[in-house]
Length: 128
Image (cartoon, rainbow, N blue to C red):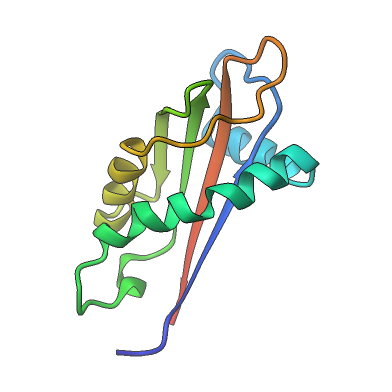
């Protein structure tokens, strides 16, 4: 098996969501917000959860790089429950990760006044 570097960048957004933002708009807002102190802190704290959600999706003895890169977008509520999950491109690894991520109990996000959900983005990049 080739050496593999898995890079997971979890980005968060403090921007309030409009009616129904597009996938790309959610990603862009998260990338802009990760530079904020609350966004960076939340991003860092989510890394173990991202790892925990990915591990069961990679069968033992297989090369995770074969799963391909993907981006997951979700909304996290005040109680730490993820919803409105979308993943692109869809692959067996990405769909598995979306299911296991949805089942996690996440830490409460840094919501601002009047913000019911907190958008998060996970970019999974596999490098052989």
